[in-house]
Image (cartoon, rainbow, N blue to C red):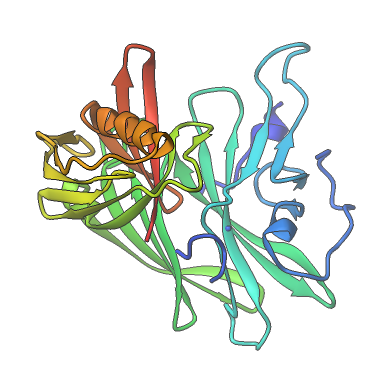
Length: 298
């Protein structure tokens, strides 16, 4: 158990530009999201772990117990591009690791080509329960925006924005800068977002389009059928409340109206926001408990 738990302490959305543990899994000659979800990764436990369809799940620490090592590829956010200037594409993405407790560690991983095959060559632990806002490849550098716990702040509720820059060269990943950028606020919501899920594991219908645009303390967008608008406020980091919501009054077919009604009702119950590998998450509460609206940037 101690060996399995030992760790190396330390955006491009959608991936255009993120086992029984052993390193004998078949190597691959192509680089795409399927490759990244079925590779062997190092630097998380003492032994490498091999993902199958994006997941690794080890044996329970105690026979028939619930706690076990788990590793997952964070599919929403990864970069494929020439990271080291050698004319060949490499990849950067994220893994999450948990072992049954409250902690959930995020790792930045690099995948490079070895002869005709791709392998994980570098792994960096970014911390416990951090939020990943964006990952970009700019002028040969990986630019990472994340939110981590400030000093004296509980790991459960990170609020400190940090920007990190990395360079990958000679088969090694090197951090070249790290800058704190203050506490996260509702101003960090700025931009246009498209709704993908009304709740966990509940994607919206493909034919229904819902979006939201944040600008300063205002919001507007398309709720499926009607345009809607209003104001937002937040008392502390990650706190979010939507003010009275105004909307036009068009009638549309049932699928659109059903999604719109649920969505607008959920917005009025939002309490907090967070970021999850480039996605925006709005947490709301109803009589059945807590749920999450998920958005991708437009």
